[in-house]
Image: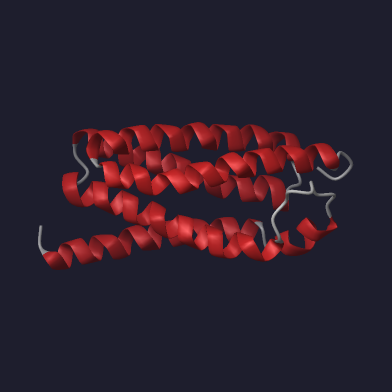
Length: 162
């Protein structure tokens, strides 16, 4: 594969990742204000932390997908792994809408658990193809683990709102 094709592939995966982030971002336009109005657990991070963390995570997700694609293309097990990745990206986007736009605490918690399993499946699938790609998803998996606990806690602390 030529260097130019590899570069264009990286740009494409970054675009996919950040388009997904932007769609999720539309669902969480009111997130900073809404988050401040909620009863939060003492261990909840400040609002300003979410943007930089998600920017880094979406970048790592794109690079991980690119590594798999660059090494294997869309054939065989790579096609399956990259398809699982797309599913987890869609679940990631949906969570923002469920929680921040539609205020569905229970459904958003169920959905983030499904997201957690989709990330796990992506990590396993990537591990078989490119270990570095799988390792790039570990911080994302850990963050979503934390976010699931936070989501559950916020839902429980705000029964009239979520």
